[in-house]
Image 1: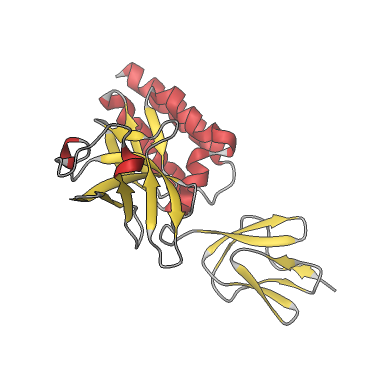
Image 2: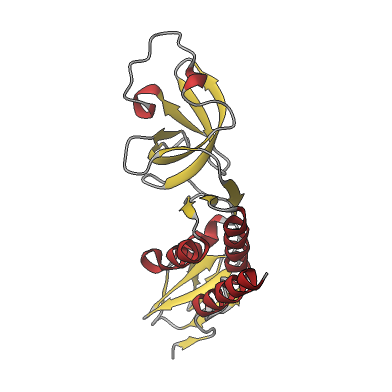
Length: 233
């Protein structure tokens, strides 16, 4: 007889038995061993019908094609820019994907993007050797100026964004900040100093409490209390 050994949103560690029997199916972060399904990493259980998978609670970002990331220029050469992706692998932004302007041979590319600049870019290719190509040609893709950059666990990005962008919309509306959340866990935000501080504190709260149910309600209460607090002060 098949039996679940865990509940939805339980935290498990590698080797934990999450289900017994053949009626359940392993998915991301779980595997079958005999009649049992076990966890292969630290994570949060997600049960979808008969499918059991894990939402990782730790781990580095793994670049994927079509991801939108916030990256930092770490090198400039004659053919383009090398960009830190907050992963084990840097990416390349070539001239043709960076600008539509004519760039003469030998031009100073730092006039476009210099070391230390941040950008919102799309990953357009990841090879089997983990060579990554970026583009800035697309809606919302650009260099970002001003504001502040924060970095969170990439596995917590879906919770910061929320279903169909619901969570990040709440933060934007409550703080008055512009916010761009990269799939790589790097976040750019810009607003008033007070708004930026509240947005950062809210995002940190989400990162720390993402595994606890009722997150949206707690975030809304946190924002309401701090908005009232700021008005009083």
